[in-house]
Figure (tube, rainbow, N blue to C red):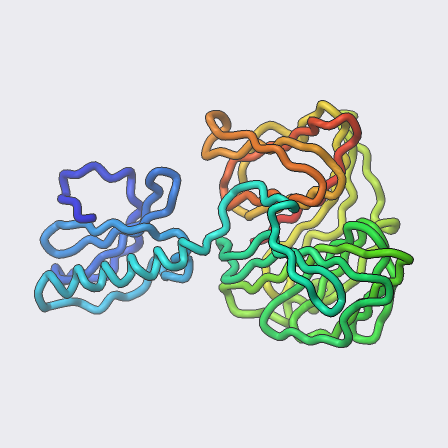
Length: 332
């Protein structure tokens, strides 16, 4: 789209001045209709508007080479940026409930794999959430990944996990985090099937392996070792697993919540960090919206994933007849 200066565009954010040359292209960023947009101010006062969802690597203080040729060159540059933004935007993970029952199922040598969520996040070029179901004695031998980080959350069963030669057998609700470059393997030690979630994510910022090591490195956390802390308001309680930097993120925070029937965890709120809820055992309702009111409430049940993008207002309520158990994972 092309707008004149007189056209109303909602309160754009102007980055620091790039150049005084009247032929420069000047990027302007704004939020319009709840989505981030990029505007390119061109010499004749025209503004080219395109969707910038997913265009997170574009530096807002970047130097743009002055254009001394005709206007069509400027518009061509704007079009190229818009196309790039739309391609990334199509793969952007949206705030929603991602149902276990709707996830495609793939047979593997070890069992079954469900891909529940896959796409681009605010601070991550790749975010993939899958569920693996292993038969008795099945697993994966030694693996090493250098370009992404992985977190494991056990839904049910028992899993023997080995990271860099250290082994621990853990069950329902236990968690492991594997940093890039570390060797790991796992095997189902239960009499029946074991199901667990894997979260694989790659940051847009360069990998900081030293930061990850200093903050604790790879680890395995047993559910039984995470202390249950009752809430003062009597609504339930939490188990805090970690809140720390890693190789892929400045802050990753994981805790479980037990929420009593007919209770809401909190009023609708928002934060910069994106958040994901893993519903382990519950029937819940999640409010999602651009503001505290006027959004939509969506139901989720055991196995489902609830995803909230950066600054999305959200609030979860237990609509079941028993305490709701779920994990909350924030990352940025």
